[in-house]
Length: 271
DNA sequence: CAACCGCCCTGGGAGC
DNA sequence: TGCTCCCAGGGCGGTT
Image 1 (cartoon, rainbow, N blue to C red):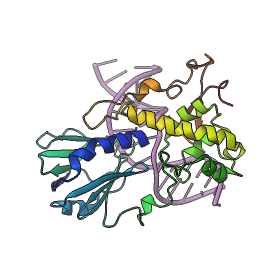
Image 2: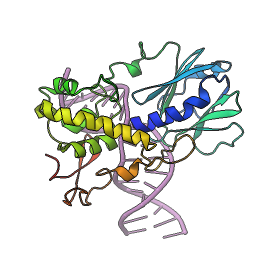
Image 3: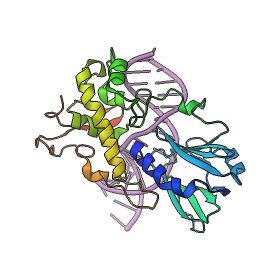
Image 4: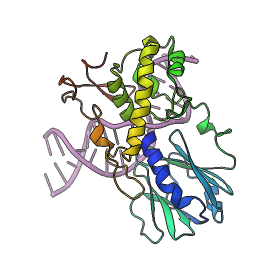
C-alpha cells in the first residue's frame, strides 16, 4: 500500500527512464480507475517528458503537452518494462516510449488515478488544493503541528494522517512514528505539548527517509519499478504486530480501530 | 468548522 | 477442495 516513501521510490525509479523521452503511444486497457482515465491522455503521443515530480502521494509527469497526475491508490504499481512485454491481469495503462520501454501501471483494486491537466496541477487542480506541507521539507515543523492542533480533540494519529495538516503520512508510518515518539495514538492532538511535537516531527521525517532508503514497505502489492520488493517491512515495530510483544519492553501490543484504520500501540511505551 | 463515517475495489486468508 | 465472509485502506463526499 503506497504511502509517501513508496511513491517517492516509484518516482526515483521511473524518472531516469522517462525524462527526455518522447511518448509514442498511450495504451489504456481499462478506464475504470477511481475516476475515469482522462481521454485527453490519448493526445499525448508525440509529447516529450520533461520531469517527474511528486507532491504528497501524487506523481506529476510534466510533458511538452501538459501534465499527467498519477495516484497509486491502495494497490497501484509502476514498472518500466520492454514495450513488447505481454500485459497481465490488472495492467491498465502503458505509456509507450520511443526508447522501446514502457511505463506500465498495474492496479488490482483500481483506487488509483491517471488524470490529464493542461496546467501545472499545483496551481488550481482541485485534487492538489489545500494540501499541507511536505513532511521531508523545512516547511514541516513542530511549530506548525503545535499551532494547527490547538483546541482540537482529534486523536493525534488521525491528525497526522490528515492531508490538510501534513501530506503523505499514511497508516503504516503514523503507527510507527507514534511508537518511536512514545505518544499514545488516541491522545488529543490539542493536548500535546510543543516539546513532544519537537520530538515527533524529526521522528516522522526519519521514519519516512529510512523507508525510502529501504525501497519502501512491501506488504502484498508494492514493488519497486524493477519488480523488487521494498525492505522496510523488516523495520516495523508495531504495524501488523497487534497482540505480539513490544520489541522494547515486551508488553503485549494493543490493536484498536481509529478512523476506520487499524491502530497498534504499546500501552506501556506510549502515553 | 471539526469530526466522523460510508464508499469505491479485489485478492488473500480464515473458517466451515 | 471449494465456498463464503471479512479485511486491507487513501481520500472524497456527505452528515452530524
